[in-house]
Image (cartoon, rainbow, N blue to C red):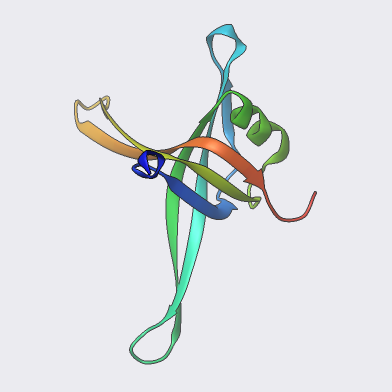
Length: 112
């Protein structure tokens, strides 16, 4: 049960091409943005679709997979955990960021 304390599973589509960088020692880091959709009927009985955007970060092997196989619009399933961080921007304003740190990735959809 301990592994369930901070676990995220998402299935969605990439909103843009992955941003992949190599850092010291050749290790890779990939940043992607995944859109998930939820559809429901409102009080008037109309179908409504809401889109949520998730910032996702992958290191090492998952980052290499992302770089090699994914592009804007690709469907993907990820499993990871939520991480929160903060930084001070150029104007001196403290910013807060919540991201999903990838543990596993599964490519979905058709091969292109």
